[in-house]
Amino acid sequence: MTITLRYFASLRETLGHSIKKMEIFEPQTVLSLWKLANPTIPLPENTLTAVNMDYVPLTHAIKDGDEIAFFPPVTGG
Image: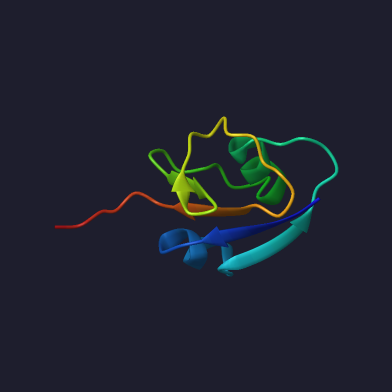
């Protein structure tokens, strides 16, 4: 199945790209997908995740064609 990952703000800067398309061949959750796509970078705490523009928990199951977005915690004042 083909999915699209979108990274925002500091995640985009850390990873060096804002969009990544992937082919996956077995069921994944949002968290397992992060680990598959970014094996050396832990998911920052309090990262918000969305699938197809709806916020979801890290345990949400991914389906073919989904767009998964990762929003890092906001800091500053």
